[in-house]
Image (tube, rainbow, N blue to C red; front, top):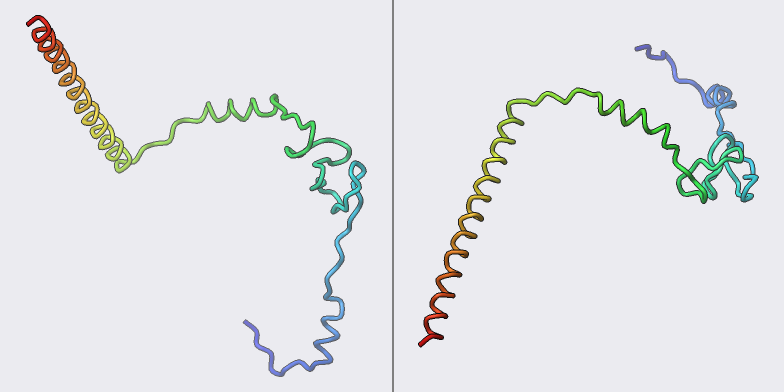
Length: 129
């Protein structure tokens, strides 16, 4: 990288930077609500641009269903992502845990159903006596 031999003076630096200044952004008023808006942007107050409702927060906004349909179709056509060995192992582990939990629940239900008739029989015997 080039390195200057001598330091630039304050005057030369000032002359160079004379055109280096910030500009005020152009603004207009919204024809719908009268709010001050940057040019070529949607009104942040009412959500309109060039007399049309384009923002979701605006009243009367209607999403274009036809425009979204091709996007959904494109997503449906995409091939499923390839799974890595780690992901497959993790999925298998989760499935094994789920089946173990289901088996325990099934055993608990069986135990409860077996106990209930035995209790009913004992109650019937005591009521007969």
